[in-house]
Image (cartoon, rainbow, N blue to C red; front, side):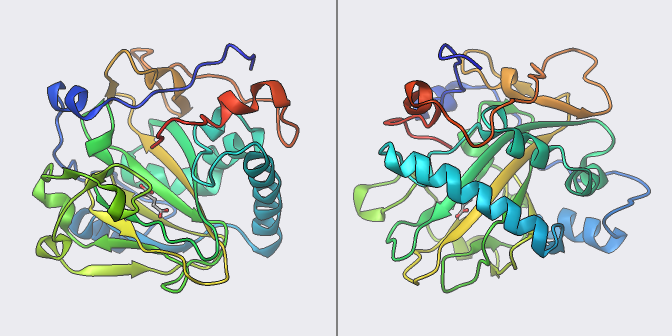
Length: 299
Ligand SMILES: O=C(O)CCC(=O)C(=O)O
């Protein structure tokens, strides 16, 4: 990766509104699951999520955490925010390896089928005592992708619970299509930019407490959020995003270029399939500012 490396940009709200996107839920039709149970897949289709799947053992998640501690320290030293480490699968070999990790991909294949593109790795790290929230939103609402078939794996780097701002899901809300939102205001203290009001009208709210090393999976149409972290403990999650190769990235924002064909085939060669980055801990200071997207709102 050179200093000329460009990462994807976020479409504005008017640009998103002008896009012709299919934002309806596409249930999993995968047959013969190997990692998940049929009951879990049925729950994903019905509720829009699955939670509490152990992936990494203690030694493995400590290695993940040590790695993240290092890059977070670099980013904070450079003036970045703990939410600004996005497109991380293109920046760090460790994140590429996590995105393509067989135990995680097996769960994703049980939902999406054998052809899988991994298109993002983004850390959402709530520092201790932080008053920011992630307001109620649907991921697909932000993304220049159609149809809405992305599954997010949220990997707990730290233990996540109601005390430090774990994820919250509205069960079944993915069946309501694209929900109306308003632009968030400064008073909302939202890390992102969209706010869906009165989330509870779309279903029951579920706190997604996870032990470090475990994952949840959620549909890109599921309404979700997370509260402040007023505890003295950090809460970091690595979001890994996956879709089937028939999903199209609307041109002009660099999203198609970032997708890795992890398994099966991308017959139309729509996705860029970039190579594994060599870099791990050492980030040269010249391009750190660009890598962490200082000043730009990320998603
Ligand atoms: O980690 C969080 O608090 C929010 C993550 C999120 O919004 C997502 O995974 O789509």
